[in-house]
Length: 473
Image 1 (tube, one colour):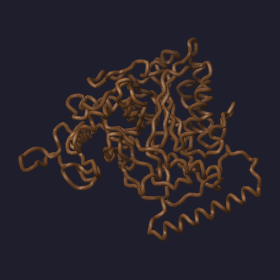
Image 2 (image 1 turned 30 degrees about the vertical axis):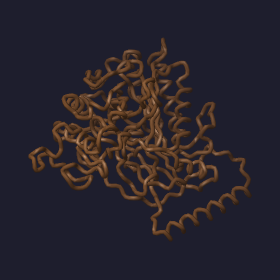
Image 3 (image 1 turned 90 degrees about the horizontal axis):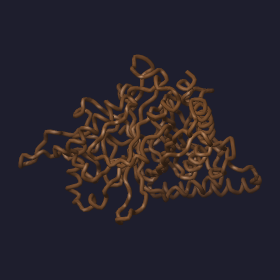
Image 4 (image 1 turned 30 degrees about the horizontal axis):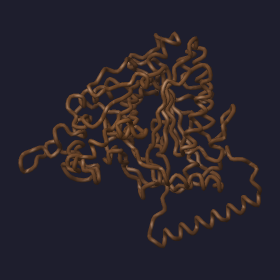
């Protein structure tokens, strides 16, 4: 996890979805009361010696954030409701979890905006968002390349508008009328079957070949793969749902939903300072996620513009492996804290390696106790997933947790919507998962229930739609 400082406070942008019917006098009264309340809150914090929380989703050079304007009363009330959101940051299987979002004042959550156009698609480099939806579509019978191009054009325009805090172009539902952009990101990918359906088999990347079978797989084919994949993330649940409905409506007769999954993470600002999040097993998870500052980060995560075996339309893109990983929480929670730490290889309290130090201390794989036993067990998850134990293989994990209630046996249907990004899934996910398959102590407590692999092209330039270079090339 990259070290993160608390950025300066932001002035939220007014929502472009907000109704204009509010009277001037009402607006002035609201502004005054909001200002007074903010002043009183700040005064109390200072008197107690507390630092105000600031910040937002981590910024990236290729995907900036736009922030300006004033805060409406309805948006203040809407974003304040985010205090009730719960944790569910990163996962516990294969690789590393994404870096945590910056601590953020709840009143500014709605103002954060991610740009749709850029070198890479949004939803890859941003910090973890509080709410997410993953949805796969299959093209309708008779739909081909022409219909797919029209669909991606509609989807891209809708994503651009909603990410800017604007209403959908056609038949907006008004679900997010009172909210700002709320760090909304919408990401699009193509599955293996998409290319045969559109007559583009010659443009299908070799890296998109189906994933091999793994011993922990108990896959539901109806909830796996798909022609098209859409990832939606936002820091407000209604904004995320609004985007999901808009994308579903835009599909029209061209495509139908194959499967949908809903997830969550800790809300920005829910902790007193930026920190690595905990997963649903209670473990701090995400310390060793690849960092954009590392010199080989782009090489491992994104397809280069040249010198690659991938087709040209995948330049600056990435491959997303999507897995629904159920955590067997009843079994896990029967273990003692010491036993749980031995399974992971890190202390549960602070994420530090069992070999000692702090969370970011390099793990000593050779350290032994007085009896001569390895302090970090040979089958510990953190040991097995280390890049230096896998020929340098790594992947950028950016997951959501999920909880879909209690099943017929009375146990929680909960776990991880695992999403990892890499330039080559064979060298990233497959390499690490094969190693885990041979003896990861964590495998006993998880189950892979659905799977998908998707080619996610680079970002759309101004005036382009996602996938245009494939569909019109």
